[in-house]
Image (cartoon, rainbow, N blue to C red; front, top):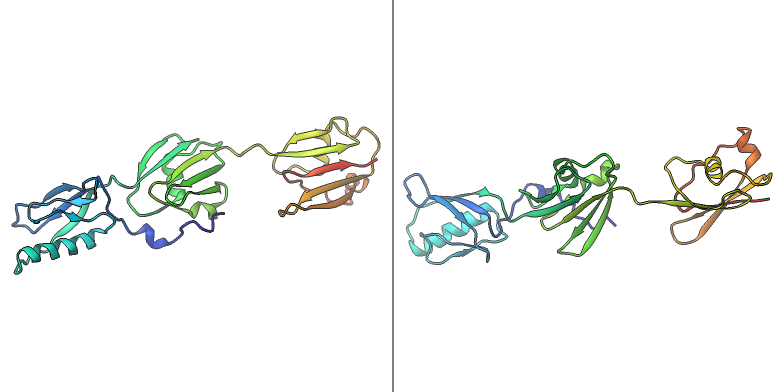
Length: 251
């Protein structure tokens, strides 16, 4: 289910620094030590003004500046340097996009989370793309998203997510009874009951009644009966069928 997915909008405004990110450390106009520093693989910032490297992985740039200032004060109590820190190059927050897109591969995101719609647009999904599967490595969750539903595209993608853009899976319906070609048939959206009978070769004998059995979502079949002559005369609506429907044409 998608309900467990993060949809906290504040994550779209935050960036927590990680290994490989390049930081711009500015210690004021007069300081010669303003420069770019790469965060180490262990999440440390090593700077000549510090006695020891600072552990900064998972912190925002504001939190890093505060920690840096505190460390400078410990070394030089009357220090009045106020460091300004920004991300010069984003590296640590990677996602992988594959499947039916023009631009597959590793993408770097500049926030803790971004909407799936942004990812799909950026990677340029192909016309036959109909669904996205997101595997979240940290929680081992999988989300399946229908790309035709705008509300589902608001799902937030997180660093480490693997996104696969796919066609719609093949779906079927089943016809038995008085038809010329019974069996499993490929489902198409918008198909009606009389169209389903035509797909199954049409009636083999004159039939008046059709039973349509549909799963109620809990594993129980709900059966509805339809009178074919009434549908053919326009007295009864030709019902839309759904994937998995079982149609039995009665004699």
